[in-house]
Structures are given as C-alpha cells and as structure tokens.
Length: 212
Image (cartoon, rainbow, N blue to C red; front, side, top):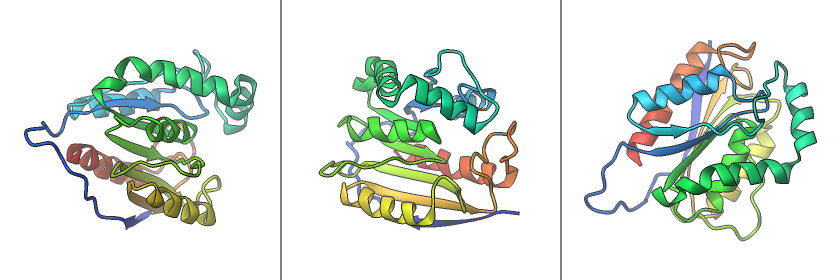
C-alpha cells in the first residue's frame, strides 16, 4: 500500500487569451534502463490523452535489466554526449513550446533542457532531478516531480535542497511523494513497480498537462 504526499507552490503563470489548453508537445526521455516498453507505453498513454509525444533513444537501441548495467553504459557514453543527443532530438520541435519529461536519468536530462529553453511550456519529472546551476531563471515554468518516499537515488536532504533551489529560479513547483514505492515504480516490468502509486502518478500528471 502506498500513500501520496505533496508539497505545492500555487501556480501564478499567465496564459495567453485564446490559447488552447490540453494539447502539449512532450519530449519524453528514458531512464538508465534505456528505451524500454514501459516508456513507449507511457508515451501511448499521453497520446491517448491528446498530446504529441517524442521518445528519443539516447542509448541507440541498447536496453538494460539493471540500474548498474545502465549506469555503466551511461558512463561510457558520457554526460556531454548524452546531453548533445538530447538537444539534437529536441531542437526540431523546440519552437512549438515543449513540455520536457523523463524517467530518472531522463528526468535529469529533461530538467537540464527545460531550464535552458525559454520556450519550454512545462517540466514533468518522474523519479529524478538534477543539479541547478547558480543564476538559472525559469520564471513561472510549471514543474511537477513524482518520486518515491524514501528513494535511494533522491534522498530527503537532496530533495529539500532541490525544491528550494528550483523555487528560487521562479518556477512553479509541485512535488508528490509516494510512501513505500520503489524508485522506478511506474515501470510494470521492474521489481520497483507499484500499481497504486503508478496510477496515482499518471492521474496527477495528466491533470498537470491539461492545465498547461
């Protein structure tokens, strides 16, 4: 059994009159496990809700059963090369105003790209965050994070600091914690999977996207 708790900073973002709500262009990045079926299923869920979704394969066809194997492959590629691949994948669509989203490693990549894109419409983080460089601004950028409680990769101290730093950028931040869930609890093919937490996450996340 899981339970969800949230920290919420109310949104004050202004919306252009006449802007059509509900349809978003979403760039969805995979975790260190690679572009697994769960990522494609998540993309299909988002498409069924009316959104356009891209799922770049930053590992170029490689998938991994364990975090350790995926991390080893990530280190071989290197952080800069991963970011280069992500930027190249997003660049053709950035003028549309993207929502950046991702799972674990993919969430950290999504955060980096969103904070560097002044046309970003939103940031949806599933199971992961990243460092925030000093002086970064993201005025009124809607940000939503979903993470297990506890999470071995996203400690309470880290998340508290991240929350404060993200707030200082000017972003509108929401954080949802899921007690008792595993790290990648939205992936039904992994031991971390928690159906109750996963469904609650998608319910809230879809509402978030509809509000943008």
